[in-house]
Length: 355
Ligand code: ZN
Image (cartoon, rainbow, N blue to C red; front, side, top):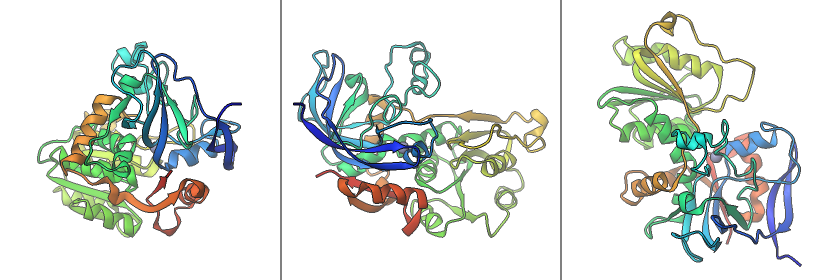
């Protein structure tokens, strides 16, 4: 009989729970089987359970995890059993046309680089399979903890890409809408890329406080002030060079466009889960002629990017563990999961420990 393991699954839309499943035993030629040590719960897991990708039954959740290599396929050259590794939430094939065109997060089809808990079993399991291991696994430097490394898998990679896509100008101004974990990392990324002024907009006081801890220059509570007006004041009426949307909603998207100066860049990092259309404010957009760029992204993956992100932690450029608000054991995952939905107890990120 196959060896069994514990997994945390979406039983159907709206329902989650634990389930015994066979341990994946065939890494296939280029793949690897990972023994999970640490994972993070993502708001995307909640979106999935609420039906964002349609109905799924007994579908293993999770896409932010680190672990130990348990087995590798015969074609894997760079990793061996026992290696401590991180694996990005996105695991492209690096062979298809979209990968070759330079858009690996769109592997094969739109959003196709996202495979865990989408087209294959996720990492909320004692073991999980990774495709194309040499390209998608990364050794974790000895001085970097599993918990810290776990943040590179999505929060840092996505948040920093939000900043990279915003064309941060050295000494320029940048604003981030949304101070959740991705927004926090976007603000840190903007600072690392050289923004001279980083503004963070949210309405949750403890999140704004964390943004200040991370070194942002000004926070704006949009429930207490008109955010666009405040941003205009802070930028001598000109608007920011770069605006990052890290919420995924009409209002912050609109504010991002309205507060960006002509020629500036709006970088969308938020997942827009509702409605058929997102509207662009005509005047804020300079009636289509203000040379404002709007860019979108999905978490960039790959070993090379993960190495760079881990280097930033290793050398003290960023401490992502400040995002950790709670610690849970694997068998307490259900509590952590629903917390991510309710946002109760000032949750930002719950860390799940497997051993
Ligand atoms: Zn995630």
